[in-house]
Length: 113
View: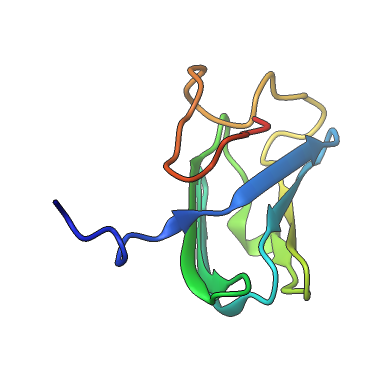
């Protein structure tokens, strides 16, 4: 059997949107060593968190393009809120992700996408 202890867990994510931005919240307590890589069409977060300080990761391919230079995030005690600027303002996205199929991650039972 393969050792899964080195495989990062997928952190729970919730999102909302406005005409000009995406409001994305990563639910991860006591996040340490957080790194972000926000590109025009993707989002990547890595960090340690939770009571056991395990590795967590979030990889998203956005429905449409964003402006990485105008994106903001803050690492708080209970979560990591992110404000992501949409490239095309005024248009609501029908979903967060590029693919319309339901995404499944090991160890994550609810995905509010």
